[in-house]
Length: 321
Image (cartoon, rainbow, N blue to C red; front, side, top):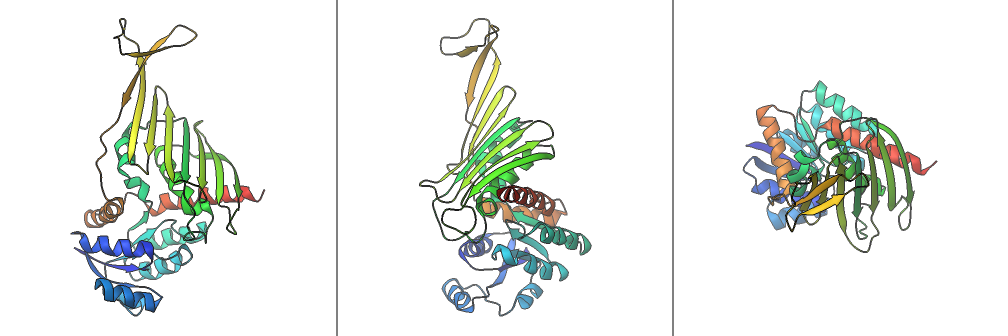
């Protein structure tokens, strides 16, 4: 079992603490939170050991789980890596691309592993369909959330849309060619609603919409490719695959047949792949333990998370044009 410590005991930090204590891959040593009043309350309520300094916690563990606000990710990661500790960082990897690149460079220099908490990669609906997504040419994503003051310290692109940016980059095997985007600030100092169009060198186009002032929650992605349409509902953890094949000579009474202008007939098949329910946060944390123990590449690497952050900032840069 790997000894792990958590930096940050806010809303998400408390979830990480609970799951790490349950895990049979980790031994939860304790946590550090700069708000000592909050730290003492959590320690008293749940029995986790509260460390008085970051340095003491880092010294006592093999792995540091960074669940602090984005602004401090770089500072925390730097200290942990220079102490030779593996790091799990909540998304986004850092506040700037430059910070992310330095985290990558330090991890290489000190030969430690790093994984970033892009949790939707572990969403069971995405896992059930990922192998079916082959060379998509059009992708549409909607990530809408009801207003929550938590997270408004960063633009909606870094708070919400980055989940979809990372998922898209993981399935489109091509470089980004061009980005157009617009964003609107309604309640916060930074945009609360954003739309982006990402064009890839292979011709694929992705249209992303994110809002944190919606009246309802929605997290849906649709992938269109030759002879198939794949729908993933990240919120409901459901998926649907619609395939088109050449129609049989003699269709059955209940077969759905389409005929185009040239007279070509196609049969439509609907399937709902089995979705194995899981705890995505626990799975991502345990997958990192597996990567460390087997010396293999983590599922979401520091490089991939930096790529997602780079695209996120290209989108944000469009807002000022």
